[in-house]
Amino acid sequence: MNLRNVWQLGIKELRGLWRDPMLLVLIIYAFSLSIYTDSKAIPESLSNAAIAIVDEDRSMLSARITGAFGPPYFVTPRSITTTGMDQRMDEGLETFALDIPPDFERDLLAGRVPAIQLNVDATRMSQAFTGSGYVQQIVTAEVSEFVAGHREATELPVDLALRARYNPPLDPGWFGAVNSVINAISMLSIILTGAALIREKEHGTVEHLLVMPVTAAEIMLSKIWSMGLVVLLASGFAIVVVVQMALEVPVQGSVLLFVLASALMLFATTSMGIFLATAAGTMPQFGLLLMLVLMPLQILSGGMTPRESMPDAIRAIMSFAPDTQFVILSQGILFRGAGLDVVWPQLLALAAIGSALFWLALRQFRRFLA
Image 1: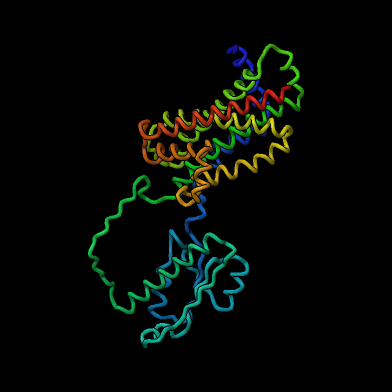
Image 2: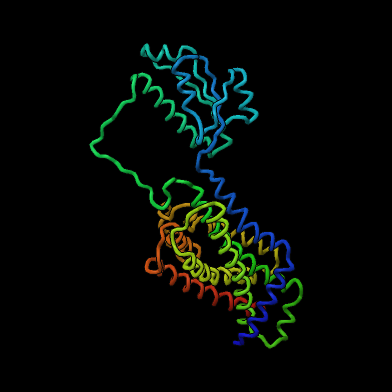
């Protein structure tokens, strides 16, 4: 192993990356604007949903129900007519349209069971599913308080003191920002190393390397350290500048420990990128392989869905994936402030998985050169 060869070949890879504007744009976008948008646009949360109310009763109770809707879950309700309700829903101007029928308050006080119609635009799936429950709870609470004539004080035998740890305001954007950084590290490391190898083949420089006094391991290591360094610097920028400064998301643990874990993760994923590139051979085939590999890794690693909700067989298989171990230790460090004494099993697992992937990639790469 000649370290000078590894260094010079890595510098060559960095120069090749600098001359590829599309990959540079992808790196900048993935570690800046993509993280910002993922933090601000969380589909599971209801925020400023558009609602309109048809008040045919014009009573104190209907005014009370109308006034119960507002930010941050809903925008200020728009008062519309019955004839304009269907048209506005067809045009997509409102997600919810609540129709309070005539004599609603009188029928309710008379002991009858009047019905309120709620129209939902189900094309907006996330808001429709969550918001309909919010509307039902708000209407039920206002009607119950009005009928009782006062706010009922229900005494419970146990006093529940709720304390939300790691995210006191229960802001989903905190988790969206950090998970976006984790996904970007995995995606960019595989793409950059795979693209660097395929670029060598397409430009015909692989033949130049074969006649030089370098080994396959030196060529692989040069691509791993150069592309891994780019992603590592970009992830550090994303955590400090984008997450902490721009989005004002607090990071509980050590950023240096997270960088160390990211380096082990990059060792594994860059080796995976070289393996996929040698298996594909061309850039279109490499892109198709990325679709088959990246989506399961990101969805089943625990970043989007808790691993406890997955079948036991899937959890056992995904425990051998580097993304799963990286998500566990990253959430432990950044969310809960875990130290080395807590995340060392995941660090060892990442080192073992990375070593296995490096061996497989080197074996495949030698066949590729042959």
